[in-house]
Amino acid sequence: MTVYVDDMAAPYKPAHRPGRTYVMCHMIADTEAELHAMADKIGVARKWYQGDHYDIAKSKRALAIEHGARAITTRQLACMAMLRRRGLPMGEPETAIERRLALSR
Image (cartoon, rainbow, N blue to C red; front, side, top):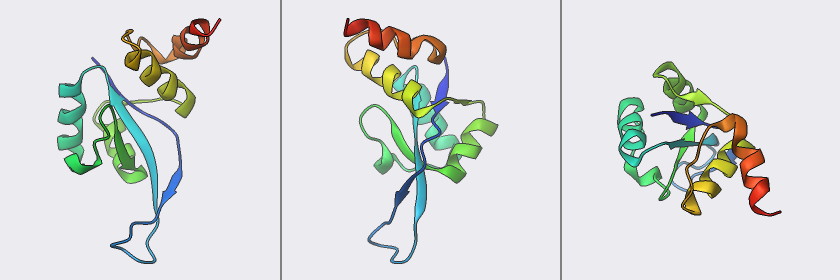
C-alpha cells in the first residue's frame, strides 16, 4: 500500500485569504483508507478531498514524503488515476503512462 504525491505546482488564491497564494499539488493512494490516514497524519482537512485524491499545498507534500509518500510526476499520477477510474489497478508509477497509452491503441 502506497501514497503518492505529484510534482504539480498550481497556484491557488483562496477567496477567504486575499493576497495569499498557495502552490498546490495532488495526493492519491492505493486505497481510500490509506489516503485519508495520510491526510490526517499531515493535517489536511477532508474538505480538500476530491473524490479520488486530495489537493494539498506544497508544504503538506513535504510532510507526506517525510511520512512515507512517494514523489511522482503529474503525468504519472494522472495516468494512475485514469486507470483506476476505468476499474483497473493503478499499478506502479513507472508503468502507468505506458499502460494508459495502451488503452487508446
